[in-house]
Length: 409
Image (cartoon, rainbow, N blue to C red; front, top):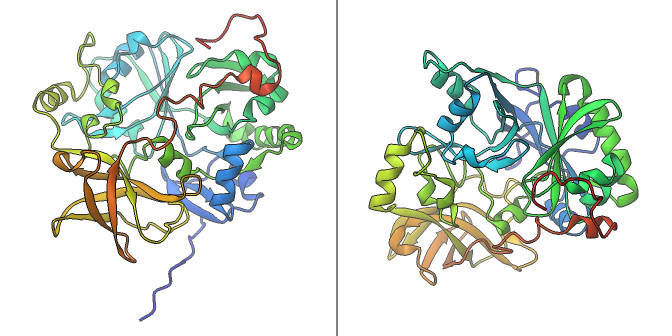
């Protein structure tokens, strides 16, 4: 019996559309997946070409699937601080933080970027899980005076070494004053937006959060697209090759509800502030796990054999099993062929004793059993110098505008 290796995805009313769905569709989406119950363009024909466009130019992608959970009200700070493992007393108004939300067992429910818009005003820009329901459940009869809803806001990402040029074209020199992981409000031809210097690429870049997205998203997309044409702007999907190279996690693949932060490695231990004032959900479990030590960890692996795909091209439809001494010991959660490194790379959840550098294992990729070795991770730019680059130089201005910066530069 033959297997259809490339079945179609049904487009129909039951699954939600990003506010940018029809705008991004005009650029020739070749593959969709579903993320946060919403169609998400994965690529436009050639993920490797999109990878090089991100590394060398400037790219635009629809991330309207990153639903925004908005938390407001007199107790919004205390309530949001209860939801996340980091200490929000160290997050200023106008600042962003990459955060974990954990359950009572310490399992990672989501890993959003948090935006602090006011003393008691937060957005959680979600990865793929139903956090608005979780947050409402936690708040119900808790005594916290908060309002929680999904905001009519949708982001796009403008990423790559020429992103500062496009952003300057759109918003003027002031946009260059936004520090890494800070945000600022702007108006784009009458459309209110929030611009943050964040992204899912490990390259320099920005996210533009369009307010009243159900009304304004398509016009905002067109304005960004037009401004980017002189700079070679290309529309792409999420570049999983680059995020695997850079150690960026994918919720649902590398981390799930069954993964705790101390299993992630890569220095993510700082994401858990066990000493912060006040409680947070999962604190008791994570205190115990840290004291006992995790029994497994996510390791970087180089995998031999034939070149793998790009992860978002349908070439890795399931995890790869990992064997050692003839027995299954773990699984590769994300893997791809890196054109720059000219090798297969990935992440494997393994028993702690097998995560030492240089340990050899075998990986079943579905087409062959290949030798693999544990290596340091991330694979490229471990100190994240690329996303922190001097954007004044990249935009060709050379110096600051002289206005007060929006956060450290």
